[in-house]
Structure formats: structure tokens, C-alpha cells
Image (cartoon, rainbow, N blue to C red; front, side, top):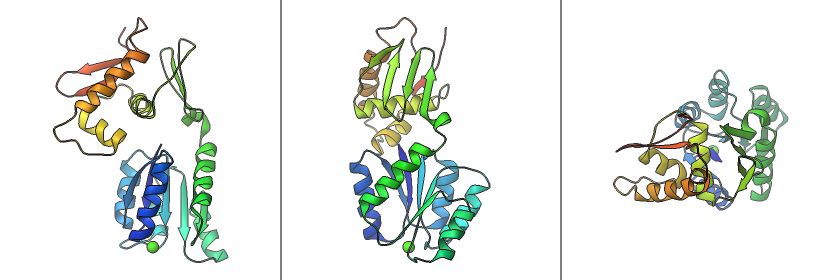
Amino acid sequence: MRLLLAEDETHAGQYLVKGLGENGFVVDWVRSGDEALHLALHGNHDLIVLDVGLPVMDGWEVLRALRLQRRTPVLFLTAHDRVEDRVKGLELGADDYLVKPFAFSELLARVRALLRRGNVSDRDSLELADLVVHQMRRRVERGGQRIDLTAKEYALLTLLLRRTGEILSRTLIAEQVWDMNFDSDTNVVEVAVRRLRAKIDDPFAEKLIHTVRGFGYVMERRS
Ligand code: CA
């Protein structure tokens, strides 16, 4: 799952990126409100951790603008343990909050709870033909048969499935799945796609992952 973290304090940001990364999340970290809003509107995040005290635009302004367009779950972080702040955040459409300082374990528990709660019906299963991915259980099945994937194969598959019919470049895949920029060496993507195909396509008659020569991949039904 991909999270957006908006936190201007370097130490806190690094700590959260590391901790969330160790727990299997890909984290995009920004330090100002305008960057947070831009990515929140144009990225594809499952949840946003939003500090209220941010430069350029504060967390409230980000939340207000975001809610005009998107329902991405938001957990806000406030330095003030005041009722009016908590109420304001929830009224603006945040889903939960934490008062600083907090224990990382509590942040993690709240993030997971929100992800479980958030639109389970549209988020939980991804389907294409007879392939089904149950995201909360991280279970992949094709033709009713369970398929075991590594963490990277799973991330690659869910990215392709969420954007069914869209051609994704190797560079974009590298950024989204490995959280890195590969300017030249996108071989890692090819290798991962080959492994994924061996599990989800090769044993079946209908192929779902297609190569777009010299560019990338698309997942769709072509029969
Ligand atoms: Ca701050």
C-alpha cells in the first residue's frame, strides 16, 4: 500500500518513513502543504498522514481542498491536544488523528485500522477475468487456485490491476514498486514481470499481462 506523508520536521519524517517502510508501506514524503495537496490530488495513495503545522499551506487548508475532490483517508497529526483542533480536523473530513508526541506503534495501528475500514468494498478485491486479488488478506487466486507471490510480485500485480487497460512504463513501475528512479536499468522490472507471468499467466490459457515493446506493460483482457 502506498502512503503520502506530509511532515516538515526532518527527524520525525525520517523516522516515520523508515518505520512505515519496515512495515511494508511505500511512502511518499513531502514537507510542505502545497506539495502534499498536489500529490494527494494526483497520486494514487491509499492513505495520507497529514501534519497540521506545515509551511506554505497548513494541514487544514490541504484537507479542505483535498475533500472537494477526493475521499482518500486522512490521519492528521497535531501538536496541540485541544478539543477544538480535533473537532476541526474531523469536521473538515479527516478520518482520525494523533496528538504529538505519539508512539509509532499507535500510528501504525491507526493506519491499519483506517485501511481496513476505508471503502472495503471498492478497495478490497481487484479482479480481471478469473484473477482475483483480496487486498486485505493479500490473497491472490486465479481460476479459484491460490497463487503465492513475493512482496514485490504482489506490489507489481496490484499496480497493474488497479490500472487495468493503462500502459505503464518501466520507469513508472520501477518508481511505484521499488520506490526508486531507474533511468537506464529497468531490467529489474523485466525480471519481475517475467516471474509474475510465470505464476499468474503461464499456467493459464488467457494471458492478462501484455508487453508494449520498448515502453512497458499493460494488463487487460484481449480475447
Ligand atoms: Ca510540523
